[in-house]
Image (cartoon, rainbow, N blue to C red; front, side, top):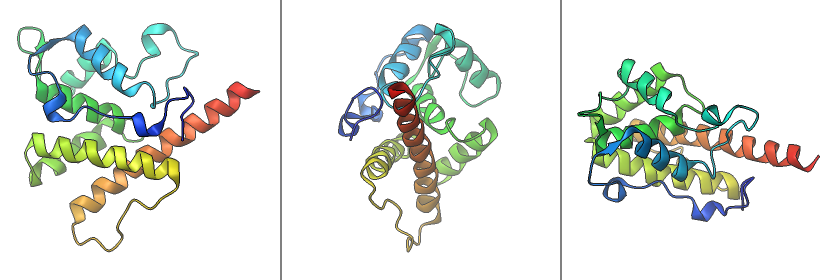
Amino acid sequence: MTNNMNVSIDEFHIPTWNELPNINLYLDQVVTLVNSCLSPFIFCNNEKKDDENQILTKTMINNYVKNDLIEPPVKKQYSKSQIAKLFVICVLKQVYSMQDINNLINIALTDSNLQNAYDKFCKLFEEALVCTYTRKDFIDKHSSHDSLYLLKSVLLSCSYKIYVQNVTSSGANKQ
């Protein structure tokens, strides 16, 4: 199944922890990395000017720092942990408020360290997207792990939103 840019859903991949750069990145590099990975599947409003036609902008990152969603950069550079959180924020902000995202990140980090929580997020988000696009079940309703059920529910809601935006935007482009 393809999205509105004719890219196969099977090709979608968020870099896992070990695939993120091992060196700190400057603001422009972070924006480029996140946008290049997410833009094939997360809808951007093409009617906005170029700076606003991105999933992540410099201004957004500065706001996330001001609102304590990510730590401030050190010597104007962002670490692997900050970049991982930015990927999570960019996916979740499709559906959730910044306060909800902050709460969800904190819940995830009570059960796990950032590396493991982020890798689980990446793996399950990719699975949720594939299940949404192929119309397969994603959530095990009989799971005894509340945190896993919560994560899957959150990712499924994001996947549905992305799916609907891609389908409706491709339908609008055909008219």
